[in-house]
Image (cartoon, rainbow, N blue to C red):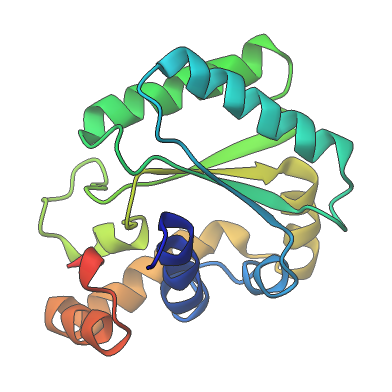
Length: 184
């Protein structure tokens, strides 16, 4: 039986790496330098404690051992606005604990919608995922990436352009071909 982690790994492999949405994802993925944590609890205070525990684990291990983390919420934050509120809470937590220079958060959600876009806009799929996910990135890793890939700020627009070129029919075909029905 496929677990939530298996589903997320498949999504990372086929979408994030396969479509090259993140040119830096393949290395930690292929070297298994990623923490995956699935939250099944209902108590949000436990989520924040476990979020902090993941941050501590990343602090304790060098990037050569653990590069990044994905926290998966398969049964929580199904409402996108509720998810964004939680994301804001976590960003506030980083600031209150003076960790915002050490870590950055990336957001992925099954109902992801960029501000100003329509719900059926194909470009939203750059951040759509099988489950609500918080991706914790090390700020140092982002800085290193910028040295090897100087146009990191252009990556979102490159991804949007890829999806516009692919179109919704192309996206549907891609998902079917790669067994990603959960993203349709």
